[in-house]
Image (cartoon, rainbow over all chains, first blue to last red; front, side, top):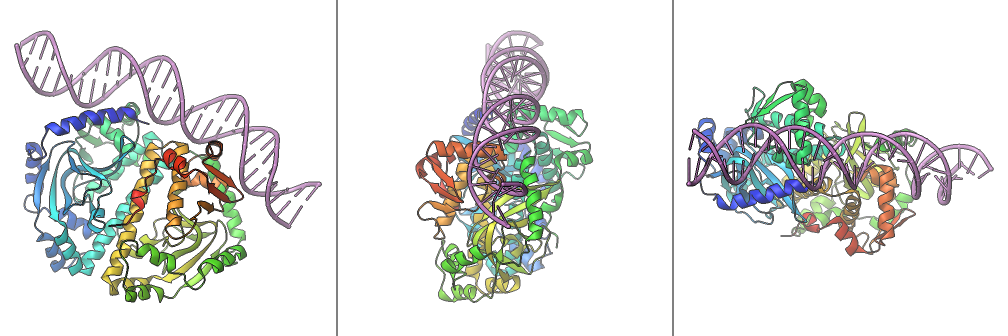
Length: 274
Length: 274
DNA sequence: CGTTCTATTGACTCGATTCAAACTAAGTGG
DNA sequence: CCACTTAGTTTGAATCGAGTCAATAGAACG
């Protein structure tokens, strides 16, 4: 299934080797400076506090964690399946996807947005069970794993907030399973866009329903598990009915209601409210 | 997609109303007595200790939790999406599946085997995000949620063991996503059987590669997201090549190697070893 | 025995993949 | 500045896996 997509990925992997991960991406760095300068943990804290707000000492436990900011060029691998990392990967800007190598092909599992810890699973079970790749240029922060664990051990409240994050991650995975069972290609693309919009808005991005996503249609194909050609047809269909505009790395949601209807989207699964 | 399956489920739902949940299922009760009598927590403990063994006081924290054993007749609902349960549901015998009602249809998300806490998610985030139904007659234990939480709060080690369970659950969900992306119908059925065999064996069931599963092919169809008719063709194919026998609620794995090859099964995602 | 599940088979349809090719946009270097 | 290259998007035609509908054959159960 979907061998085209894989061919594309092979080319990208080669490109990956040429670009070094250490080479900073100017545009991304600039974006980061504008948005997040000095408050790298703000989005993570915002997510952690969706269930209930944290006392200042808990917030400080997080805020005071040392981190190393890294620029990741487009399509560069951040971590490999099986790695035992001493640092966690917090997404500061851009997108990071989880994927797995199964019998010569790479299957995309999940997508992380700013504020997500992309390898949350490895915090508890050290060996990473999937690979991480930047989808478009991204900025991440490396946080020493043991220090983060120390913080969680120091505060049961904080630990519970993190446990809830894994649970929500599970909810997103479950929704994706339902999506792959039930929804046809159009509905799947629509669902991805709704999910993404909702998650971005909940960390203060894309309030105007305009998403800056540096993906090609091939990337979208990988994310939804649809072939490139068919993805293109779906995008055209969504454009034709006036639900979205998609050009120049920008997606404008023109008709949110139409899109949610096509996607049968209901954000319940993303909510952490009591 | 798959409306046949849904029609079947509607009939089953009616049957569900006739059978009361309180009516004990004799056969299941008998099986339970033979297998687990007096040690309802043994399988759960076995799972919790796969990462590292627990000190006796932690084991006792679990073993001493009060519980109510319940017989669940086939296809009876155990809990509904949106419920806020005061008790967790530990599967003692039989199978329990998670499913979600999306736009008039019921989609199966995951399958739980003996030793699993089927609503582990609701332990942390109280509102259940999916429904639970017994797939065939099952025996469950209800454990007061607050007491279990108390036990976890009393022992960080125990709490970590539970955190690992959610992580493994996530790994199973991820594998399912890969499965729905990549694998065709035959491979999906094979994968389900491999996954099931492995998980059952890890709690001491089906060591001889003979699974007692009280499902119809319609149930298998729901679990794999394939239509009933096509599921039947797949089962026949697997029989024809000598990979499995399936008759009288018994599945015999005749050729484990062949099956794992068809499924591209690698148990790494199920392992909790260091 | 008839009724009701369950398993099986055949014919038809359709969504999605694949292969192939054309077209657009954006660089890049001579 | 234009030819050449490369990535990305778009279109068409052929094919195929899987779903749907419909009908039959067993099995199980009262």
